[in-house]
Image (tube, rainbow, N blue to C red; front, side):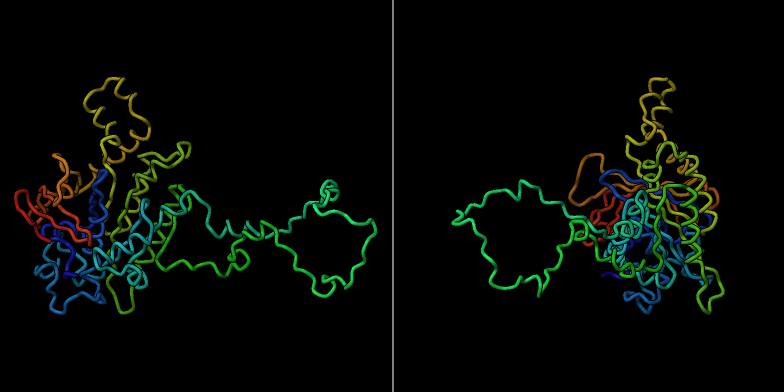
Length: 396
């Protein structure tokens, strides 16, 4: 594995963002942001991970760039102001996916970082619309099922063997049941009860740093995020500087789309809830889908104000477009992924376009952040090549 899995062209954009900034990642079907989220994890955790097995003693990581301290806002996790912690919230992928993908593509041990209180994962996929597994198991207590009575027709059913005489033959030996009573056959319900139901203590313990969303209510989302942020914000022994917390939200638009319309969860309420969580962290990275069917409501409304175009959009499209456009206006950096306009290519996975928001007026361009459009290729081993148009081979 090379010392760094982040291409040099992306290092200024995937390092720890500036304070109170928002990076928006957009994707389409076939061009996922998974690999880009892993690079943000590497930019925030890898350089500050002293226990990493692939960290070089001379600091010659990142392809000879000497770390990420010269990139980004200048207040990255590599300075002496404190460690960096990450809270990852995913509504589309579970903990096992991110743990394996981060190790394979980024060389990160998220489980170890979670034990060090530097990483927390909020699972918004497994239990969002389902009761906890413990509650389900407790409701499946084994109960005795009465046996069905034998009908008279079954007793009077003729035997297939001929009857030789009408007299009854006494048994030659005592019944076996008097010596060794046969065990009662378990009922169907008792056979299907999980061993965890009889022994609740055998339930698997929740790993440290792992949280779950069990309700689509925004109040519950804010409470779980507060607990996760407070868990990684604890100062380690001997450390006086507070940790800088990076909040990564993967597919929060799924929460908006799957919520019950009668619950009152709208694009504006979702944006307000995320804004409250942003006030508790150093910076935020937001990954949202931007497929054409999902943003058609915004494009049709801007192109024409006719009632026909407004009625053609579904409530899901309208809410998604409103949420995406509002976050795009708030974002300091927008990193958009899309497929090639000319079709598929064997050595190109898609196009990455980077645009800057209002933060470019505050000197972002002088810190290495410029607007650009590059091509990228994701390999089977998780490695990524990023190169300019016309530059064959690229750089990793």
